[in-house]
Image (cartoon, rainbow, N blue to C red; front, side, top):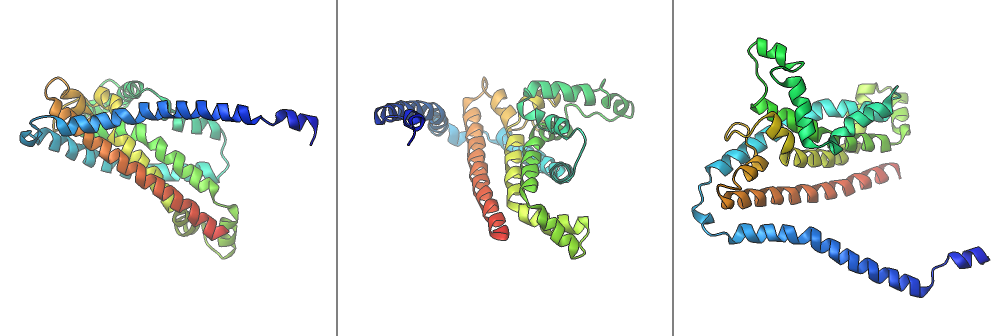
Length: 280
């Protein structure tokens, strides 16, 4: 062992001290992340009068959230999958720039996203103005809710799909091409099946993001009960009106988020195992 190696090796005392500090900080951070969630559950289950609560607004918000996210996910699949596949498997000029713009909504403030959608699809927007002249209004409608959800949620699916497609060895395509398969057959019969679980995981994350969308929706679609009021908007609207509705709706959203996270973790593990078994 050289002198430099001896100097680089931490002493047992240092390791012990670092471990203790890390443990304390880990407990503090875990407490900070877990306790608010437990507090939400406790508050929702202990509020008086929930048994006689008028559930019409909650039911309407749940139906609107599930129906709009279903449409959003369908659009994300149809439009996002080809984009992700092209970015992952084909050379492209300005590929990094395109990737930046595709992933920008992930870090963009939702209110800014809503303003951007208004600038394009609003009554005086680039696309909204000619549509308004034809009698078609997008803002403050279910269509606006779907567009807001697609804008903020699609990058999660596209990013996951691009990563999964890029992880597949190029030899798969070469072997299929030698056997006479065309590009569509390679995509449909090889790439999609091998990437299925990873795509589903990204899709569930995208759905969860769409389900929890608030900022862009309230700015672009408004908060109209039965028309554009999704569950996150109902939580906001009921804060000063009825805390029972607020916490019950929030608890439903939390349960759906936990379910989505669990399924995503499971599917991600299955997808990695599938690729390893096929290629290993």
